[in-house]
Length: 324
Image (cartoon, rainbow, N blue to C red):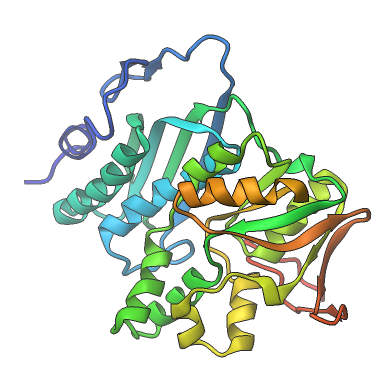
């Protein structure tokens, strides 16, 4: 028997996440009620994921649930924020109980891991599967995009390019083997660097999460900080799976422009590098210096010999401007 909107919410989305003392009223009423702690800054973010744009239409339901929260948590990580609550809006072509159960399971797994509570949302019928998640948390020592300073080193967490190649493999039906599985897992289940960002909040000067491609997001950081960013592609951290599955030029291009990494790009003083890398190791993440911050504007790529490099593509853009 078909379930109503409210029955779907009650069955699949009530009680998702951890139990929090600051949640007064959660799923089931017209609005949620929360009690933020006095004197703390709230960090808010929202992302919409559309099937066929942000995730493959045939992506497993549990990974869609997981990723829809992970991409928002990555935004909180870029601010060194502590996650607290989330809201969910779900547009469904049809209400498939099996899909909903698996989607809710993926969402709940990450919400529990992050210490968050689902406090409300909405379910509606529509032509395209669309997931919108809003997150909120506390940013006591916020990292921002506008703090990079000339003389800083430029760093990234984890490895780059895996998710972009994972998407190509998934779309091409090349899903067998340990390397393919590893790369596709990076696509479906990104790792928001919450712990790393909080550990580096007192050391880093600026941060941004890498969602649309390193070149595109580094350009945002440079613009907001009114500085120039220099990237040395030979320093980019590439996973063993990516190196084995792609040529060196392809791997570098994917790492620079592929997107969907949800790693952090940070600017921090060079004399803090040792301390920052030690804290990163404690958080279970590698931190790699990939360049520097200078006076000027924009992003510049240089080779091992100091020559300027160019790339035709800089990253993902939902609304590219035609040159014609």
